[in-house]
Length: 202
Image (cartoon, rainbow, N blue to C red; front, side):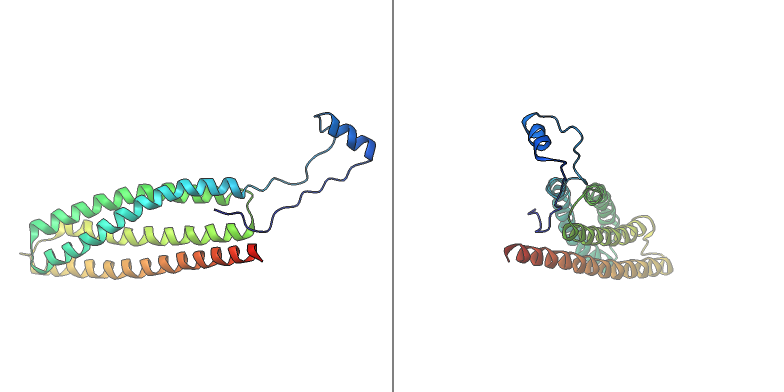
């Protein structure tokens, strides 16, 4: 990640030229101190690279999950109990694994935000964190829907079957809405990043 244009300028006022030269000639800073913490944007970027490894793993799991969503819908339409429970259990396991990667990525993003970084990069990371949190909330809705199907689906019990299907449809709608919000946050973050790069070139 490239460092944004604004950097913290550190200014030290010295008492006199002779003392300043003496301080330079020796490797001892003496009474001189740097005012303010050093900019850690570059170091924060390295942490985010590690978070991206987790995010790529989530992307793979997301794609696998999307395929299973259609499989699950088909199984429900045909009242295939065996397939519904089998696919639901697989979905629950996949999302559980994704949550582990998501939590690790969020921790790294928050660690980077806690460092002394420039304002543009901090805002970018905040948007990316919001996008990831929305995505995780979406998967939680889908995990709960899959868990209900796995544990309670029974096509022979009409009332129970219909109730479970309604819950599945409701949570699926919430899943889609949250995923759209996650994409919106992510797109805003990407636009901010592009604008920052333009500023650097000016």
